[in-house]
Image (cartoon, rainbow, N blue to C red; front, side, top):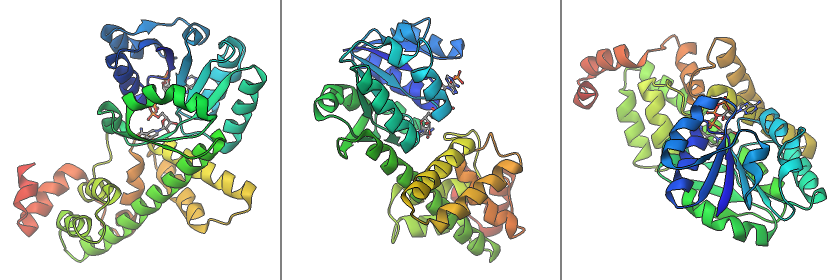
Length: 314
Ligand code: NAP
């Protein structure tokens, strides 16, 4: 298919590359020019502007947040002004329910179609084309996008015809992930302070009563104290909790746990955590317990203390 792709960040660069590899005719645009180079070498075409990227059947956006997507979609010479009638905006960023509704209306008014398809999975899953995609929109538009979604993920789950439903499901999922990260951080701090090996503890849990990727992946990161480089940056995680709370407020749904997570992120960012992975909120409980550690030095010290040979091998 002839498509455009806007937003070549940690996720978008890997996703656009998979679309090129799958044989699609991809024109890429990114605000910072240097991020386009790798895609052009792979065979993508270069767009000099947002409007230039909008000449295909579908324009995909994978941008940081509401501000970025609103700038690109709704501004003068943006996507809504530039896309042909009948063409589709496939929005894959994690954005607010409110912006998703606004974009649905703007595209409908311009005779275009809007599909929301936010994703679960970090940049390594994006690179491996193993994202889980939650999609919503007009069924015919969704069907037209399916070959693209198949090149990006291992599963697409359709959640209805209102695009904003997919955005709300994504936000609720990230709320659950952040809650699991906070809970893991507290539990790991508890056993660690008692002298129990953190890695062995995560292995016990994730191979028995919690055999889910979230416990394995984030439990491992918290046990290692390994929060850099960020695969999903803490400010973006904070954004998602704020957007979940905004949706909760507008639907009048109290979410006390989400409010707590909001303050955990605020604490992390107030202490200079902008460049850390969002899982770094799972390291705060250890700090509160006076047992904060750094990954490398502590890994060696800890492994000597408890005779963990696996850790010494790293
Ligand atoms: P990222 O690495 O920070 O990339 C953000 C992208 O947005 C870059 O292309 C950036 O352009 C662009 N951008 C930011 N502000 C802009 C603006 N005002 N105007 C134009 N472009 C702007 O973020 P990411 O990790 O790829 O995440 C992208 C989206 O996917 C987010 O909505 C995130 O919540 C979601 N997501 C991320 C993950 C993950 O694990 N990373 C997983 C699932 C979903 P520049 O290069 O010029 O800065």
